[in-house]
Amino acid sequence: MSGWAVTGVTCLVLLSACTPAQPADLASGPSSAAPAPATSTSPSQTGEDRAKQDALAAYLGMWQDFAEAGSTSDWQSSKLAQHAAGLALTNLSRGLYADQYNGLVTKGEATHDARVMSAEPANEPTTVIVTDCSDSTNALKYRADNGQLADSTPGGRRLINGQVELQQDNSWKVTDFAVHEVGTC
Image 1 (cartoon, rainbow, N blue to C red):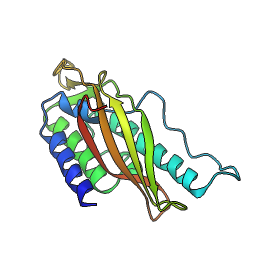
Image 2 (image 1 turned 60 degrees about the vertical axis):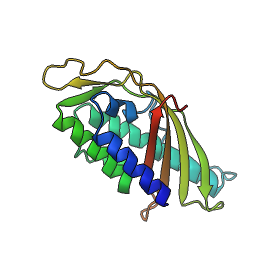
Image 3 (image 1 turned 45 degrees about the vertical axis):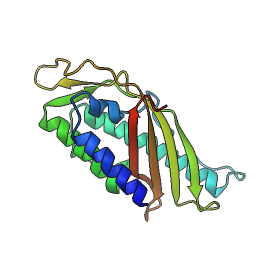
């Protein structure tokens, strides 16, 4: 897990120390389609299948919550904790705080092409690793005071790795994520 912690700290540094356009580049929001809510399971669906489906929905839900909070740079949004916990929640909040401090809001949304890479333990997973090729080309930073574009540099396609864990209340939440440079996917 120490690799995830280092990667999370790296992401935190990127979120809080970016040029104005970079926080939008990192992960401004989900695709226009909202994540599907957990559905009733069929008799043939395994515990692993349910876990993967629920973890993926939590991952996409986290980015949807982040995009909504980003429209006003609401770093204290209670929605952020619906799908994120731990280092992931800290990184999201700090990124939004930096935007608010700098007088920025995000307009537009990133798209996501997220997939489950692994789920452990196999029969009844408690940890799911997600990989995502997110495109932040249409998510830009604007000045909150006058609505002017803060930086016209478009984002692009970048790899995001996420760790989603089963919580004590049986919900799934993203606990860590790492955002890579533009062009990594």
